[in-house]
Length: 265
Image (cartoon, rainbow, N blue to C red; front, side):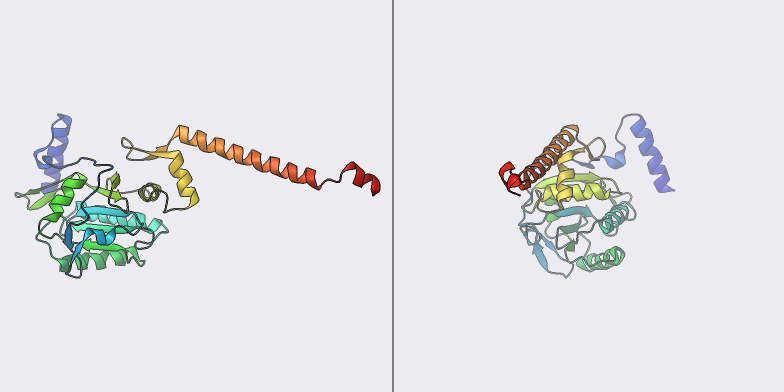
């Protein structure tokens, strides 16, 4: 009931072109191209402190999401959507890319992070040595959130954190590469975001071609066909096909006997 009232109030405020009070201070300011501090430390699911650089610098892109494990609704939807799309991708966390999930609630413990990891890996139904569940350490989650533009706040009345729904992609060096919003994600978008963040080191040749032909449209919250890229790719394919035809004709011409050899035969 409370949720329905809150949603109704939010709709009325949006209709009046006003931000509802529940969402004040909640936003995502994209920091594309900026590099996060890899020396920030957190508590791993095993209870030991770990620096972010432990998950970077391995030549693999990183899928990062900020949630909190006791979240009653939105975080669960984000993580469920993430698990669902990762099941559609043939790559393995820990091999082609890393996944780092961090709680924004400084009161949450590594024991809870461990339980959440067990639950989501069971739902994932595949091995995922590169999916890490962390908790805050010395307020570093707030610093990280500021660096990636993830703005959230604690709602004392509801005793919940108000935050946006998004997953972020970073390069192996910790540079912010892409944001995907919402609670459901397209496999193509995640593959292209990972390929883009890896600077072409992750993904098949087809993924790299698709990245050349698609670009991210923030209005559509998705990768969409890029006309110039498609034209260039099409031109390259035509040139390649023409080259193959000419090469075959040349080979055939060389294999044909000369007039002198033909008379001698």
